[in-house]
Amino acid sequence: MDLLNTLVDKGLRRELPTREEALAVLATSDDELLDVVAAAGRVRRHWFGRRVKLNYLVNLKSGLCPEDCSYCSQRLGSTAGILKYTWLKPDEASQAAAAGIAGGAKRVCLVASGRGPTDRDVDRVSKTIEAIKEDNEGVEVCACLGLLSDGQAERLRAAGADAYNHNLNTSESTYGEITTTHTYADRVDTVRRAHEAGLSACSGLIAGMGESDEDVVDVVFSLRELDPDSVPVNFLIPFEGTPLAKEWNLTPQRALRILAMVRFVCPDVEVRLAGGREVHLRTLQPLALHLANSIFLGDYLTSEGQAGKADLEMIADAGFEVEGAGTTTLPEHRADAAAGGCGTGGGCGSGSGSGGVCGTSEGDGNAAAGAAAGTAGEAGTAGAAGAAVDTGAADAGAVDASVPGARPDLVAVRRRGAGTDLAPNA
Image (cartoon, rainbow, N blue to C red; front, side, top):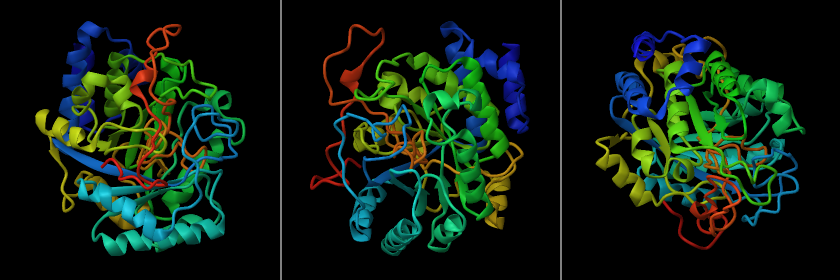
């Protein structure tokens, strides 16, 4: 296809595709899907080889969020049966992080529900970051705490944070349909605050909330303009007890097309496969590794993920390798820019850095969550860092035959790890 050849050439040059080209990727047929994956895979391998970065989410504070993000199980008014607990102590969070690091994660994403941190919360998270860094030499730490106020990003960086996750989630034109307690501009402002403080920016999206192709392209182009180092791609898991419980409108094929489009628009950025991959990609997850160079390991914020051992086997069986702690994730031109204190590299766009998801999540809990799709402090989900978003559904149950494509049987509320006495899935 001439379209794909053009997009590969642009991706290798770090040149921005046109909106029409991005929309054309989403409009390709299932017969063309493997060609799309192969083309985007060439761009991914050019910048990141066959390396897969592992990220691990730690939900520092779960539930009881005052924000009304429609996708989030921790939102105001949610009746989802998720874990609810207040702040983990620094040593508890460090122990939780250690499980993921032992499994191969090189970044830990610290997420907390809420609109945004108080100064006392920043002190608490700073102590947690210091504890994790002291116990695990060389580990990256990303915070996802929601909307930031003056000076808070600088304090997190001084404590040792490497990155901040805050997702844009969806297009500016439709944002008010998803959330009313804060604005799209609030999210952009937090991303810029993190960037200006010298934190690596992590910011992504949530697909599957009923948005149009134009909405998906809009948010990805907005992310390119903000130029984050990490872009978590979350896929909504409709949580029973939330307003989007009936939004089961993704197929594995559409999820792959969205990931491919993100790779073409942001060729040299860490694209993270975040929340909802197990639910929406299902047996096609290995194909997504040809598009994304980063995933969350194990469970998300409020939903369970694929077993950590299965993640590692999937990476190996697909012919990829886990990125080692001593390897720099970003291409040299972006890594050099980040080392200069701007948090982003200049390769995937212009703009100021973005705040992100840890991954992420990043990615975050909701679907991913980790990092994510939302903003971690908001709706607690979003975040995820790197973020992944917490869109998990209620406990696994029968398939909802009234909604075409519904697979709530593939999702379960997290009942282990942080906030429980049970061993985590890492």
